[in-house]
Length: 269
Ligand SMILES: Cc1cc2nc3c(=O)[nH]c(=O)nc-3n(C[C@H](O)[C@H](O)[C@H](O)COP(=O)(O)OP(=O)(O)OC[C@H]3O[C@@H](n4cnc5c(N)ncnc54)[C@H](O)[C@@H]3O)c2cc1C
Image 1 (tube, rainbow, N blue to C red):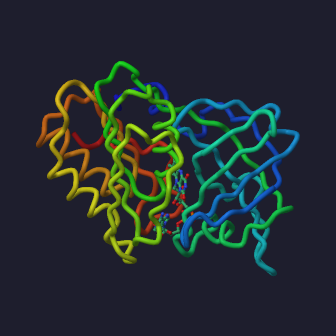
Image 2: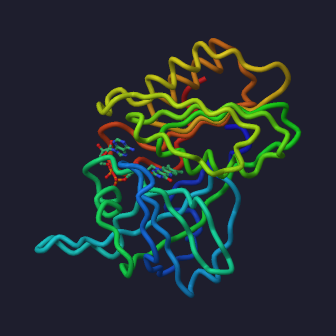
């Protein structure tokens, strides 16, 4: 079992899982947070039925082909991608999603052209991460796709909990204010450069030289799936970190479209 996630959830194949509620939403605002990160604010009356499930949760976004002449998406196999709700406001019925613009891909391409008034379907939320408020410390490790998850975890920690955060981005222009109650958090930005084949390399190097604080803490890792496995193996096998202190998530995989949303790396360590 992977940290606070349940074994039952991880074992259920996608087709057998209960269908998540779906909401038709409209783009209310688009904000460029950095050259490669876009915040899209979705809103709509239907979101009165949406519930916030907690930090590092996810929603599914359904993308419709808008290329002229492209074959219609088969209704039973829509193009979906997985994203973290960064913020949900039940009063204004708005959800923020922060998209990394990484290049080719239905979600990245859609986010790069997103504009107010466009509509799409959103389903969720999925299960969230259970914060242990008694933990002595947190170490949060992720690439740019995990910034929303990391921010929602930081916002859920007791104010006095010490948090050390490693975020890997392409370059200095991607480093931005996290705006997530980070007063007691130490943020370390790592730059990997533009070559996606190097994804996770700086995170792995940082973890290998990291001296974990004393006491019983929690480590959360979310990044490219192979890099996540290398980091997981290092922590569990070489460092002998107790399994219950670690949660790892593969958020995308180099060369693979639509990486599964439940890649916990349990084949390692
Ligand atoms: C639980 C969960 C939460 C997530 N939350 C977020 C979030 O909040 N924000 C966010 O931006 N992403 C998030 N992701 C990651 C996102 O789902 C993937 O990056 C997804 O593959 C993007 O879809 P796409 O259509 O753009 O590319 P795809 O069609 O899936 O992939 C096309 C190509 O692009 C590559 N690729 C995909 N993502 C990246 C990347 N980030 N950098 C470089 N190359 C890439 C693939 O390897 C593939 O070769 C999350 C994933 C999970 C599982």
